[in-house]
Image 1 (cartoon, rainbow, N blue to C red):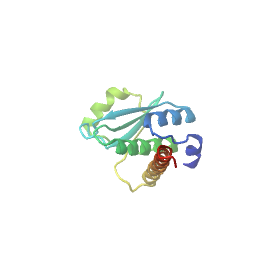
Image 2: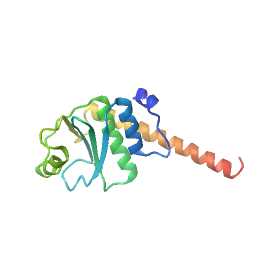
Image 3: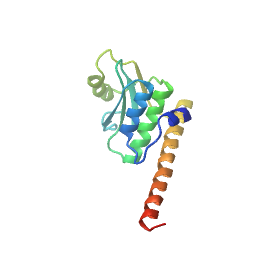
Image 4: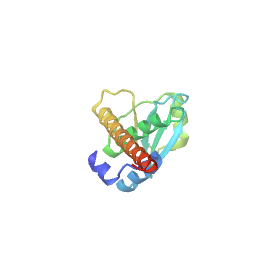
Length: 152
């Protein structure tokens, strides 16, 4: 986790797409982000799948930006750490995913359905760690701007 954060520093203001692009360059494999109404298609709030050419993180488009960042970071850690969690998806989710993925193109699929597994706890730790870094840096940036504004 710390090796990734040293190689791909967190920038503020945080842009999850830009961060994922830099992580993708670091690991040598493209990462795509796709916002979807996960509830409407029967998916958990976040998931990822691998194809031959790229990896895709699906995240809930109906939640807050902060929650979207947490979801994306969680799924990103699964990709980076090589986690694999096989899951059977419902018919609605399968119908939604098949056109995105293409028949026979799926290499790995993972979806969060509990926080019990070690992999899930690791992914949550990574997301929290990055969000803490963002919070500290935004706080420092705000303090710096206030100091400049008020001559401190």
